[in-house]
Length: 193
Image (cartoon, rainbow, N blue to C red; front, side):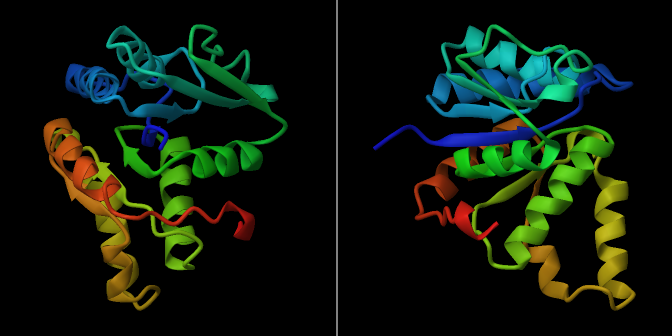
């Protein structure tokens, strides 16, 4: 059986607070120590680069997936275990999905929101049943969580939409929950996407 793989969505910037970079560093380090493969967006900048470097430093395997047009913009990380260059953002997300057993969302911006909402939507549509963890470092995700609750309150989503993901307060809790979730059977039906 191959090692578990965890896709991490996070910012290509560091963000305004040092605690964001600290969380990314801890996440990468703990994944590497746990022998879980990191699957991420392939960049060498911001929190993306931080999580990848930390996983590598801890002896972990790192799979980067980056579209051709972002090679220069996100400064492709050439030091990862394996790097795949795709032809589009859509194929990047499909490949990250196919390679991952679970998803972890760290602080980030529009790209992180896009990846998070899409992977939640795929789960809602029963295209997968892989766990999704939002790490609410210093409350950064509160506005996004508020938007999701507002969609339910305003009748645009069923209350079950809030069960598609789990909010965790820190990296340590994330690792505990990942360990429990990945031991359970996980659906991997990329062909339906």
